[in-house]
Length: 427
Image (cartoon, rainbow, N blue to C red):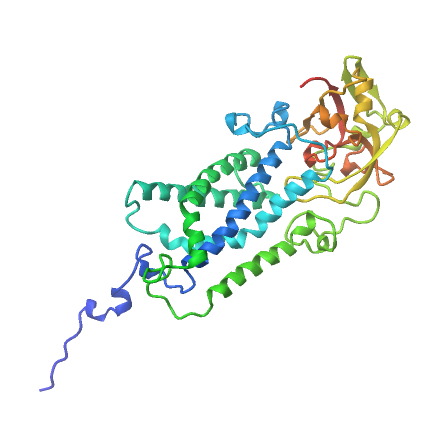
């Protein structure tokens, strides 16, 4: 009689890899041989420098709007003591905002591969159990939550703003401003806790006999060295730099700034062939609004004055070579603007000796910054113009015909187009 074979039970049939199934909370779940304390420390020090630069230039960008001058400039009216750093934004050098905001956006783009690599290198620690082994460990985990959440939020909203994709709820200015302070809280705490350890690891490595806290306990065979992984991160950052920096600075790289709006696209021929953000059609400026019936209204102690474009052209004309630089990080080359000095218009309004602040209103009826305020130091600068021409030709409708503001070192949105009213006085 043939021997009967025992049918194995279901547990007997499960392969070893299923019976030994691991979760992300198990250190053995993470098996990349690239992870290690030194690898993470290198990325961390790069981010320490880069993120500090981002935070400082971000604060400068916000200060450039002169938000404490007038409510129309202030997109975070409840900032309270967070506005301690605000000061009168200077009007020189004329490329100041172009530099600070260009650095802010370009460095942010370049740091994306570094940030992702750093998060990948420490992700096993995010799943470590128990969540808190002590009060100090709990504070470290909270700071890490603020740091990671804040960094991802700031990078995501910033990148969407660069691409002009306003998918987030609410104002970019408000979200990015308060998100930056949440990120800073986590960043400062994390640096205070981890910087000494990172410096020690980079100088001396892991002490002999001590385990690497970030290395996989059961690593897979290596297919890429840690130096090779760092080189890949660096190559990714270099690629992003080459394909984005040109829309912030002049030179041949402008033609290959392919990853960002206002980058390598050809602007067409002619004196007005340079970057523009909002077109006249987009804000519903009709030809009838800017035709023969258009008048500039100037208000001040001398009363209310009205000027046609022909009358403005008959006044003393001045020229200034100035760029336009926007919060999205793109900027134009220096364009040669020509028109009437704001200080001369202030004199006509009743301020012949000391031009005050000015409140500017546009024909544009909707949208942010259709009204804006300029500080007295900006009005006094001889390069601050009510521009009527650019590069030897009348302004095009998209560049603000019949008249626009052009002020050195100011964010692009303060260079109001389609100007209708100038009100001089203390704001």
